[in-house]
Image (cartoon, rainbow, N blue to C red; front, side, top):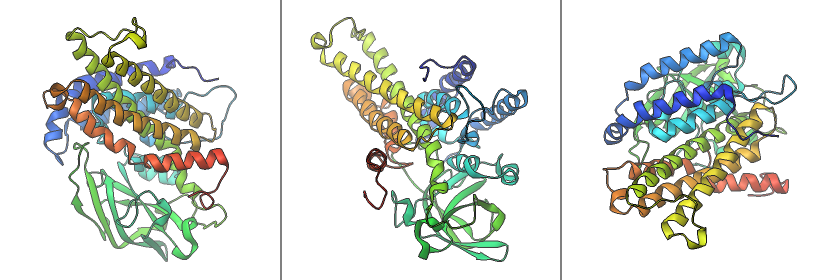
Length: 406
């Protein structure tokens, strides 16, 4: 049975994350929102501290720390409940995104590519890439949500693979030290031939061709990358090089079961920021939504806040459950998609709703509320859109394959 309280061993992590959000992220949040593509140099020291803390935790034998580079789902190795890396990462990230989503995405060595490496890399690959900042390159000009429609190719040539294709919307694509690229080793075999490759920055044939200008998360760079006869060692292929038509590309997709709760946690964090700030402002105006008045007798503003907080709590609990299941070696594909779908939609509704509740004060840049509304939109899109998450949940509930339910 899942315990709904934050485990005591994670409380210091949660407290530290809140301090970073409040004292590091919030003061520079507007600065980097107004200076898109400028690198937040303030994060370098923070990332180094996080690396040191994770190494210290690992050395003491108390776990593996937290962060995208630690996410993985192993079979249970002992009896009893496990509160591990997935749960600690989700708890910490909720607090960081209470401060700023874009800055959280920009933390070195916390990219989605790091999660992919942690999920399927072997020991030798972890030794080479485990401490590198890795981005994830999946989306292409010809597809978005249909991950099986990859057109980028990786052709075996001796001890190397030659990659050709274009990737777009690569988070941290310019700043990262490596990019995990999805490519097909044989397009005639369909999705089963999709593999992921680690391509290090500076590899000949890999070029960042542009940076996108976005609605939100402006502190995070989003790049388009072209691969032209880009030669990558075969040892950089993550997972098995064998193409198993019956299994499909489940191994590659496994990464999402770990990262979707992470994105849900981001949504939970920014939604809570909006609720908290809206409550503060309304309290100064004499509106105290303290649950002392029955909902049917409450003002419209109070009733909306109550509903927002209920939806927020549901999102938070779904997110914690999905991460907790991963820590305990339980299949969590359905729960990860449920958390991502609920939290992404709720964050959009809450952040925009809080702007509306406060009128001109919420709309203007004197407050961060309008920024949070812009930042939250991406959380319902990347790592699988709202519609894709609902489709995955439906397949799991109805026991249908992707071919049977499209």
